[in-house]
Length: 403
Image (tube, rainbow, N blue to C red; front, side):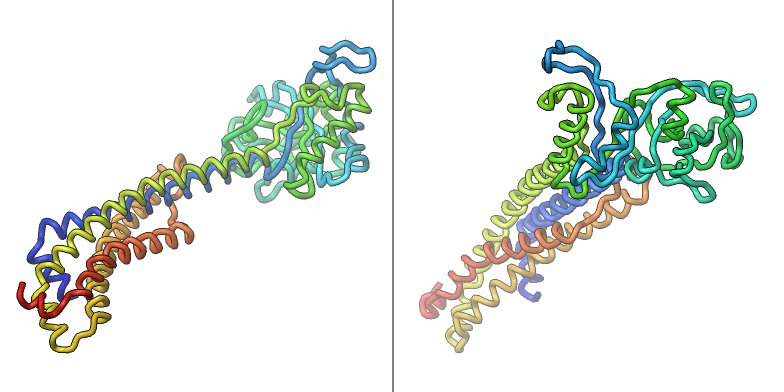
């Protein structure tokens, strides 16, 4: 510490610029990795609110001929065929048919055009439909009895009922009265189909068939027992529906699948590549700062040549000289690193307290990022100090005293 203070006095400009380079390198590493972690976690939460690890299949039109049928036929899947899939498809954990339509919904004198989804009870767990306290989602008895019940998206509730409680109230849909049994709890969502969940109204699939007159589902929402089986389960579902609906099991266009698990893996690989690129750039900045430390320590050793010669003449061992120069180097590197880490922590705390977190996430210094930063800082310190320290330890006391 004493030698570091001396260096600050004797080489103010060079020492301060070296400290600034080290501080900037650490600041850049921590800021880029922490903001990357915050953004990744935000996107993961939003994606999970669509449904963790789910796949959504949409029956479309065939593009391959099959058993004498020309391509271009619509694929028509009935609700009963979807409900039979759990017994036919190995590895399928949960599935729900989904009818999708748009219609006017009335509550008193307020009328709103909404997206209607006719679904099974499993839809709630698949699509992360958590209802507010005091309500519930659709259950098996609602489906078997084709009950007139509805679960509202939270923005639909706000537009129809304002601040009043909606559970227990009545709605009018195509001349039929529906009782509200639940309201979606607000959630972040960055992807959707047809509409966001806050603008959607869920009713039993059997009720949708009766009220709307539809007989063929618009989508199948499902999840495999494990993410590693998702692709194989999708292939099994396609083969089962191909047999039931009369299209080629090789015709991927007939049943278009949105696999969110594969999307999540791609997103994690993208962020990993981004972290490596940004971290590598910051590490290069830190290495440049390390070169400055090495130059500074070479100058310090040259200026202290006579002093080192006297110490060695009085019995100081080369190992002690080596440790002293390395210690001074590590002290200098540690001071620069702490300055950069302190500035980064201050920026992270300030940003975390602002509304920006809704768009960029909450920046957070993860344990791997901290470990990588400490390892890089220690490596730069040892590398920068080793060569000047070795030169000092190898000085000949007689020659050092004559310089």
